[in-house]
Image (tube, rainbow, N blue to C red; front, side, top):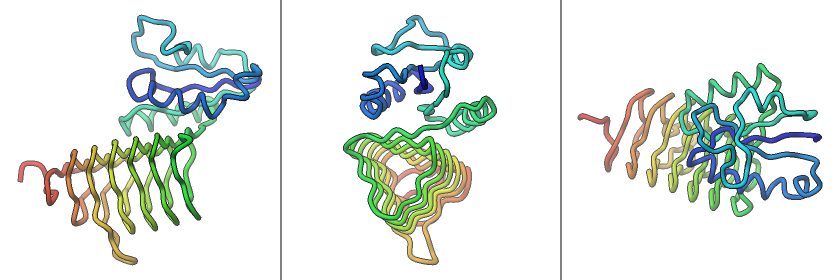
Length: 219
């Protein structure tokens, strides 16, 4: 086998990502040049999930292939970062998974190991860091700067001139108001924007905001 590719994480999100990866690699899988598996170190009753073998990380590393590749389909930013570092140390190469109906337009910079699910969009002139997740129907608009290990839950809407720092989580259906050139709306490092929240001003690092307009939880 020339290469083996893994979706790291065999739980809910990983099972959503696997068919997208399978479609991307369809021609190579048909010829047997590559393999496609799940990697999951958690307790698993089954050795296959949705028709794909489930391996521990150690088993994946030991699999006979010229190159090993992994896409990390785990929501937790800290877990994703830990796994990415371990993969880097073991010469496991990151790969991105992009749905066939995702839309990535002009002059964007996209980091390695990203996931773009169905009907996700990036418009133009955005900069997005490594291991980014864009769930179904989420979007990033023009001139945004998105850090590493950021997650957009389904339907999250990031309007233009927004900065999202490393490890932030934007909840399902949340909306982040457009900033302006030189004065972006900023979502701080490790912050969480709750489901359905409407963010009208910058969010400090590490806090959770909820509601419309979004306010720190408990205030």
